[in-house]
Image 1 (tube, rainbow, N blue to C red):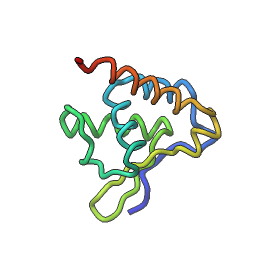
Image 2: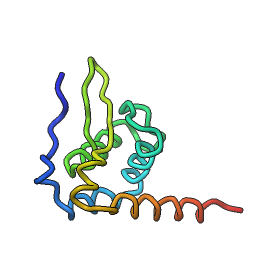
Image 3: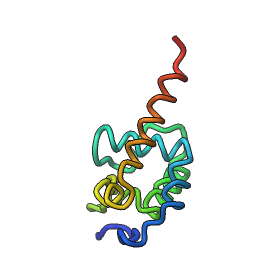
Length: 109
């Protein structure tokens, strides 16, 4: 089974990327991929139903942030880091750093 549809690098839109990254669940998914690499669709640690997670993964893929690779009946999700860094240098780093800071400040001492 081939990869799922995704925009070409030239078609990745900054507004769509920022919109996709504005949701806490989608941002958590991106952070998990960034920290551990490609993951199975069902291996994300988020507090949403599977159907909701599927929708979040679709938004990330359609925005050009992730790539979904199908292997048998498994779907593997990875970041399109090279494409994003080429189009929007430093954007993903800034967003992920800000998310990490916010997460650390939300943890009670």
